[in-house]
Image (cartoon, rainbow over all chains, first blue to last red):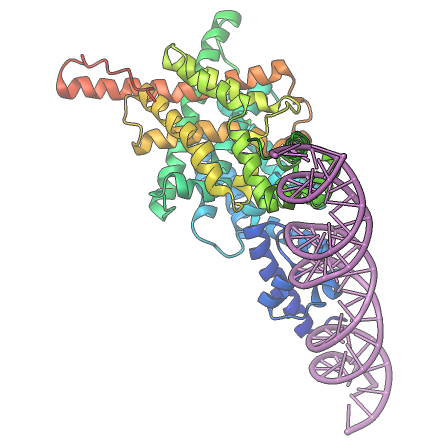
Length: 233
Length: 233
DNA sequence: ACAAAATTCAAACAACTGTTTTAAATTGTC
DNA sequence: GACAATTTAAAACAGTTGTTTGAATTTTGT
């Protein structure tokens, strides 16, 4: 028994679409329900009718953007069967695709950025459902390269260094445009960016690993553990 | 002829102080003039009387925070007579001091962060007076290590990588608190952070330099330029 | 000490916010 | 096709925002 009409579902979807783009662009606090409704071609009361609150609409947008395609792409990059360094490159590149224009249903990264700047009532949802899984998987990946446990402090610091480099371009876009106007974030430029961040990060990761292995062999004789199955779920 | 009274100057200063802390904490848009005036012990109309606008007060706060002590400390770190890698470490460490609690007159970094997230009418002032000089000096420094011109694309990308790592902790503070609660940002922890970011970055910079020098010596014979005075102005 | 200028103050203003209300229109079901 | 439920619509609500007003007060220059 579908208690909701099709027309209702369609305005609901239009509201989520419009709100998603605007939330991603201007953040939660700087987006008014009137703007959303105008963009969605709906009445001002539609938000309260369909989502109870403005925050209700926002959490729904967040929840939906968590299941969006790009996030799956990042997960796929993680699950790829390849050497960890290649996986890292794929993850970074996939994640940076968000920078090219306004890909539909690609609000996730930008909403994440806004959440960082100013927490909202839905921050817990964003952190626990959207960020934490990717964060822990990145820690697993980095720890795998470093031959260190995922919750080791050094591992975490390195993961933060990778995330920070990526986030910078999402956050600082308006400032970068004034500081380095030649960066237009074209497709090839984003690729170069991903290559750079990967190489920049791997330089330290490789060095730290080999240094650790050198001291390790000095301490406990030969290394024969080969415990490289560190990128698991 | 001091046309302004002393009492007036004092409320003016109190307003700037209160506004600076609150702008740094919550950003421009999320700070109300009523909150500022209450904190400053001034009347609601004081802001408009002394600064014409809310944005007038904000630009004054920004202008003042640009001349604040911490920024001078960063400049001093840049001007230090030392090998560039040591300078880099000093700059990063000085810049990260902002993370420890709420140091008075240390709004600069946080205001910068808020500007990144959401541009304001004073963004131009922030970028041109506060960010650009440090940015170009960082490019000079990094270019000096890389033996590349400061406006080379690789140089800029590396500078971005360094900035991104630092900014992450400023931005992501609320999220980091949930993701890695053990990071309390104590004095020693901030020191470790600075050490890590420096080492993480230098790993790539050193590697890229030596790689470049190797190919360079292959091309133009012996290297005898020694043009290491790259951190000027 | 006194007039004039500068500053503070309480109150109200207009514009905006998210939300609620009440009635009209649309929809699904018999 | 009629009736009941669901969905839209226009208007107004209560609250907050930055700003202005005009009179009281303090400070300044002589």
